[in-house]
Length: 254
Image 1: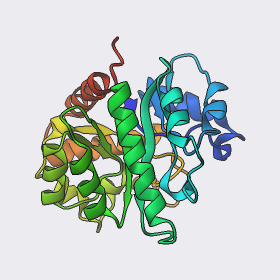
Image 2: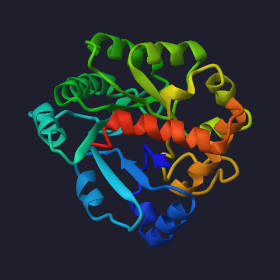
Image 3: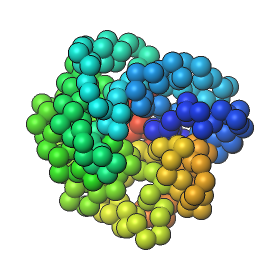
Image 4: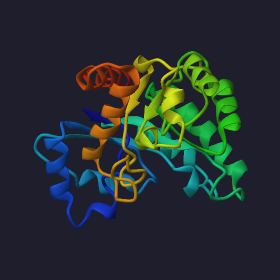
């Protein structure tokens, strides 16, 4: 299995990192993709290694960390994302839940990330919280036929999901699809599995039956099992399809 969105580099895992890795391998995780929160995230990522797991880095600035965009921000982002060991751009996006004080800066940052993603031909990772209309509008503006990426932690409507897919995006399916009263499972059932990838967002958003606990890559098996129930296919078929989609999107076989 490929966890396409994990912040495994954060200090939340400092106390038991090796045990977390072992549980991930035992659960069938062999690849972990790591979106950045800020430019300092890359240094944290560089220290990670464990036999049996491939770690891949992304570079970007999380919308909750956007207050003022420094001069040269886009140039620095482009330089980082141009490196061969960076497989994606982000995570970026919009977040109107925590604060509406820096919406203009968030939008400018998202546009910059989109431009960089197109220049380096790498997927963009999109965070979205209470900002769907604005997020999809910006993707529409930036889409020139080459922009690709993932709507991370997808929890939109069927119509929003189809709109995103039509714009060239994939849907990141994480723990929220397992929440009993969330309704995401019913929405996902109406959308194509071949446009989905698995993710955890560890250490956040643990799936049922681990809600309330720190999330970790091993818990992704519960998300895979939920998709197996939703689409009435085997867990292996879910894993095979989502893994191949992730490999193709991020060019992991190259």
